[in-house]
Image 1 (cartoon, rainbow, N blue to C red):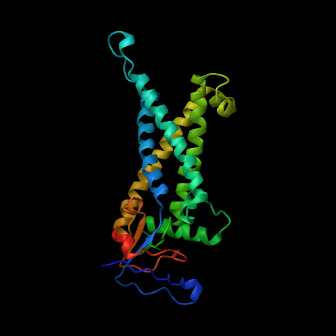
Image 2: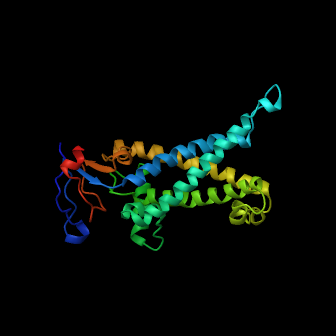
Image 3: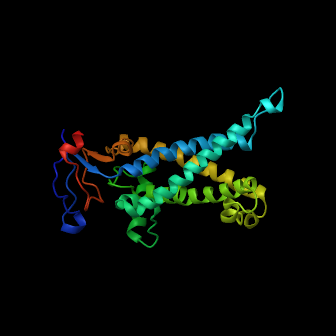
Length: 264
């Protein structure tokens, strides 16, 4: 079935005072995630994978290699890869923060936590019931649903800042006093107490992000199957497709995909 043409999105039930449209068979495609957001998502995923593997090996070094020490630099290479991925992770996060201001409103969801919005909290608990198999049907969203937004904010937005700050604090021990890493992040080590404390918290942060990644992948695959909307492919094409379902709850002001653009 072809996506809807460039038509004005219908008003939400709250706006026009009518009930939500009855479920029917249709296909609707809406452009959600812009190219910088999608590129950052996959580069960030790769950086997290590399950082986790190399970080684990740094915390649990491999056995000593036989032969002359000058001929074996395995842990040195592992640390170099870790530091390189860390720079990519940090620079990518800064770029993602910039795009939160330059991009569309979906690009800002990662850094937005509507703590005082009672309606948002109600939607969050409704989504939690859906993921716990206590609701018969999901409430669809063009962007992140409230539960996903909550998890992304704490695990990725706040978690990334924590890992960058503690990571560069540890890195400053190698670059030495007076380096820009020491000037910007050297205060972190005495704040935590000592270097080993920062190592421990940095390591725990890695496991927290990995736990989020596992749940995130599970939720994406589950929603693709059970909620009849595209999740994984959306982060490739940028287009959210809704199949055989009611209109999304946050559909207002969204831009349907033109046929020509969709074909390209």
